[in-house]
Length: 74
Image (cartoon, rainbow, N blue to C red):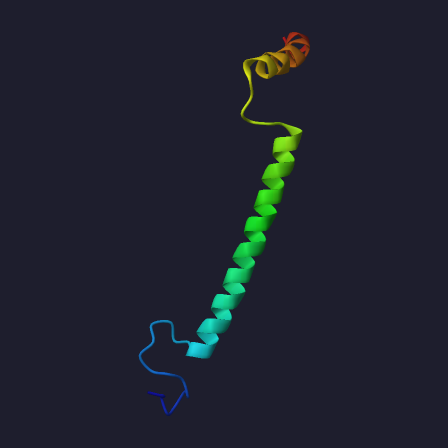
């Protein structure tokens, strides 16, 4: 049912027509996919730079690199 004053469909919760809702959904979905793709690429680059699931050998090597800095600061 179309409201004669506004020309919009009456009774929708969002106040949008079906076409407007589909257009919004398309833009929202595309934006979500782009955001997700950027986040995945960022996580891959950070993983390459500094993996967060480390073996004990890598963790101790990281601590060895920080020890001179800590002695300099103290």
